[in-house]
Length: 222
Length: 305
Image (cartoon, rainbow over all chains, first blue to last red; front, side, top):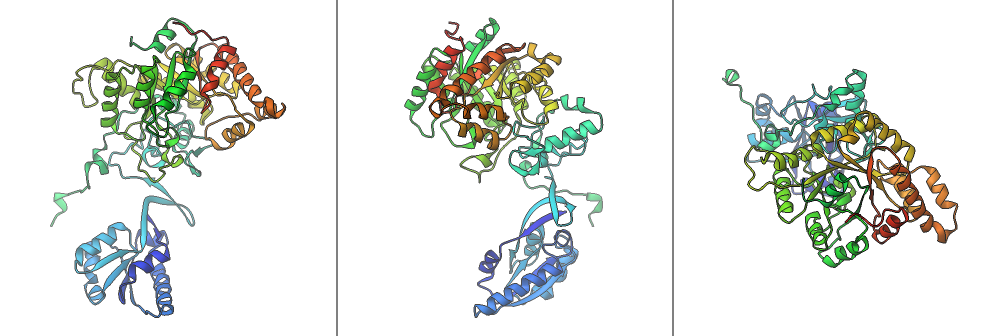
C-alpha cells in the first residue's frame, strides 16, 4: 500500500488560510488502511480546522467527502457536484490522488493535507514500513525476498557496507540493515554461497531515471 | 603494472606503509602541503579521502594532485555516494591524466552523517561495481557503455573492508568478491580488536583471498580516552574493546598520548605477524604529525626507495 503521514496542522492551516469554503477529501484505499486519510481522519481534521478558524474569528465551511479511490476516473468523476461550489479542495489522499483530482477539476486548487512517504506494509498494528521503490526491474529472486534497492540506505547490490552493526543500518538504530536481512535469508535457506554472485550494474531506465513512467495495455483500452 | 609506487613496494615483497591525508574544508593548498610534510619519507602511498563522513572538503583529486607534486604516491579515494557512472568514469580519466596511479573504491558514508544531510545521494553503482568499472576502463579499454576508451587509465585498484562490521560471517567472502571484481589491495577498518581481526584473516586465508589481494591492516592511534570512547560508542562498525580504554585510563593523564602511540605500535607488530598481512595503513585522524614517530617506533623506517 501507499503510506502517508498527515502534514503538521500549522502547515495545513497556512495552506487553507485564503479560503472560506473548502472540500476536505479522503480516500478509502491505502490512506484509510494506514490511518491517515480515510473517512475517520477526514472528520477529525475537519473538526480541528473548524474549531481553529472559529477561534481565530475566521470561520471556514468544510464539506467532507471520501472517495472509494482517488486514482481512478470512475470515482473521481463523481466529484463534480460536490467540488463545484468550493473555493479549494484539501486532499488526504496520496500524491497520486491529489494530482488526479486536480487534473479533473482544473479550476480548483487541490492542496495536500498529507505527505506521501512510501510503498510499504503494515508490520504490526500502528507500524508501517517501506518495502518497494518501484525500480521496475525486480531482483527479489536473487536476494531471497528482501529488496536491496528499498531496504539498504545506499541501495547496494553486492553486500552490506561497513556500517552494518548488530543487525542495524548505520543511518539509524531503528532501521534494520537490509543486507543483514538478505544474509539471514541466505542462511535460512542454506544458500549463503549465493552471496558470492557478483550483481551487475543496474539498468535504471525502468526506474524513475528513465523519466515518468506509464504502462499501456492496448488490449484493455476501450 | 601501473606506475604506482605502492604497487611496486607490495610486488617486491616489502611490508607496505600507507597513511592518510584528509583534505581541508577550504581551498588552501598549504594545508595539504603541511599535512604532507609530516608524512614525507615515512609512507609508500597516501590516501586522500573523498568527502569523508559526508562533510564537504577539497576534492580528493585536487588534494591528491597537490601531494603528487610533493613527490608522494597518492591513493585517491572515490565514493559512489556523490557521482553516477558518468561522473565516476570521467573523474577516473581526469585523475589518471593528472598522474594519479591508485584509486580506492568505496561506497561512501551516508550523507546523514555530514554537514549536508538534506542532500540527495546517488549510489548509481556500488563499490564492487566501481572496482569492476576501473578494471574495465584499464584492462578492456571500454567504458561501461561498451564504447572504446582512447587512452586507458592505468591504475592500481584498492578497496576497503571492515572485519568488525556485521554480518561477520560474510566479511571475508565480501573481500573475496571484491578481489573477483578486480581489487588488488585492501585497507581494513581500524583494528583495535586484534583477536577478531585474526579470526577474520583466518577466514580470508581459508578462501585464499590473501593470495589475490594485498591486505593492509588499518591502524589508528588513540589520542585520548575521549576519542577511544567516541569511536567505541558512536562510529558504526568500529570495535574498540573495553580493555583498550582501561589501559589508557591506567596511565597518568600526561602519559595517555604516549600510551596511545605505544598501543598503536604494538598493534602494528601484532598484525605484522599474521600470515597474509602485506602492510599497514595508518589512519592518524587529524594527527598526521605522529605518523613518522609511529613508523619509526614500529621499525618500518626507512621506506624502500
